[in-house]
Image (cartoon, rainbow, N blue to C red; front, side, top):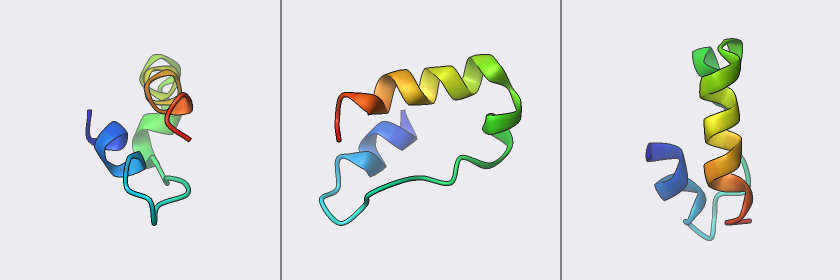
Length: 38
């Protein structure tokens, strides 16, 4: 949910997701939730 809110900000173009990138299901969730925004 936090990544989605950050990506809605016009001055933010990307994200460094940290530890979530090591967990496939968490990373996929972030990508899925934010891909439609930008």
